[in-house]
Image (cartoon, rainbow, N blue to C red; front, top):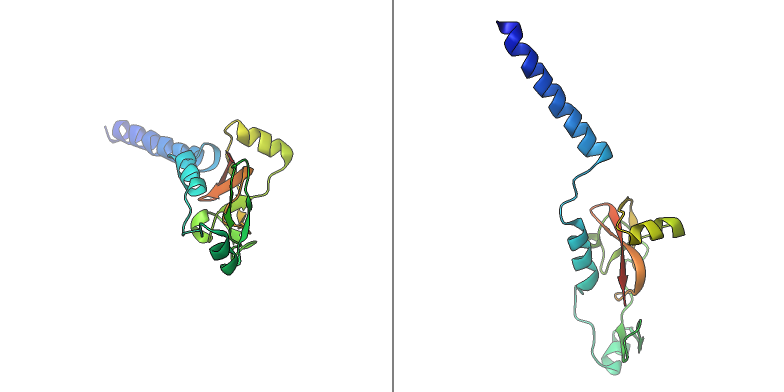
Length: 142
């Protein structure tokens, strides 16, 4: 009678272990990671000056950024180049360096387990690999 109860219990435990190994190494569950990365990319963490004089006094650069029709301020960051695993560790955003092939795959939705570096500027445009919780996702910002 004990063997009959022990065998299903052992099978259940082995199934749970196999599931944890699969989720940890082969198919990690990443809830809403794309939404978190998009929010990191589109949220400025502090106020950027709105006029050229204030921009210059804050050591910023006043110019057109991306495809925007008007000039605006972009500020340098103090931690540009610092190794990071998410934008919460940076003044601005955490960017990964991907190969061209990885970038193409990322634009199709693939995520990459990697570290990044803090951006040199507050506003970053173009198709970049933004890192959140150690996972990089390609997001295009204009």
